[in-house]
Length: 435
Ligand SMILES: Nc1ncnc2c1ncn2[C@@H]1O[C@H](COP(=O)(O)OP(=O)(O)OP(=O)(O)O)[C@@H](O)[C@H]1O
Ligand SMILES: [Mg+2]
Image 1 (cartoon, protein in one colour):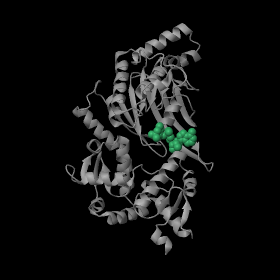
Image 2 (cartoon, protein in one colour):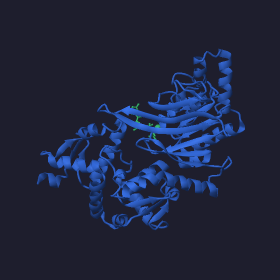
Image 3 (cartoon, protein in one colour):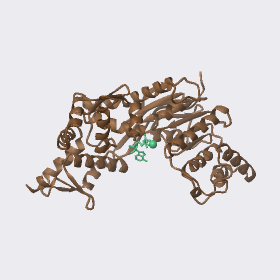
């Protein structure tokens, strides 16, 4: 049996919503990180992955359940656990060397040892020669290397990486990921376990011994996929492609119902839910592509990702939008256009608008609510703030902003309402308002 290092059992976490009520973000999460393994955590935006990582790092506490580090309750940040964030949270006025040394300094490590350990890690991570540089003199990839060096210099037993590669361009991200895996395989770092949060399915499959898929609202582990392939892995290998397929399938499994069934009330979208980030142009584009050669109406999601040149996150968001609107169905990592989707693609702009409007009113409560509000209001003109305030009861400010942006874009496309940017107001389309 592998030795457990970090363990969550029955962990719950809520944040306070704008109306003062508690909104559960994590519910009854069980998770064990063992010695010798790399685990990847995938899940939709807002499903609570970062929150779980912060709890594991001891940066925030859980409301319920237990967090154990080597069998003892974890209270606050532990020396052996380090986190790497997506953004390059470096001190701009400190050199690379000083940025890397910072944590050691806080631990009271003597100057000479600090310098020596920092130099060694800077060398490992490929930044030799840049010790004296300031963050602004470095590229994004190099800055992220500094962020990783800063974690590694502490010789952490557990490394938690929260989308550590996602702010980088694809090639730089891949290279850095391979280098981390090299360090891991070669034993040049004392790290015993790594947990990575990612939106990149390929990255997860290339790195991890286990992939966990998080469900949203509230977040919990929905599925787990062991990956027994030896590293380094080849992206094009059949086994790898199959696993990527399988993960796509698991990722879309829960959301598939949202678009199809009307009987399953629970799967239906609620007024205060987030909306998938996909504008009408992307929805049209992906549907058109899906209908054409070589797909003829159905596609393997990874293949479609390649063809569309969208990131996994973008493609998943648009796929969920298509399912939600009844234009496509999702199953086992495949997407298939529905008869309504075909009708939509075949239609001219006005027909497409009509179909879109009907689906919005039926399946997207936020759009229906806005329309209803505009019809009730005598001026036919309402400030966007009104709806934002409502959304903030269930979503954080960015999510609320994003849900409303999507609803407005969809509503405008469907000619259900108009939006005036400089006043921030939503109106009924002109023809109707004048009647
Ligand atoms: N400090 C906080 N106060 C209130 N709500 C919070 C706080 N931190 C996170 N949340 C909420 O908890 C939910 C989960 O957030 P979290 O950042 O853990 O998600 P995530 O899975 O990491 O998302 P992403 O993939 O976008 O990074 C979100 O709905 C967010 O609004
Ligand atoms: Mg996150």
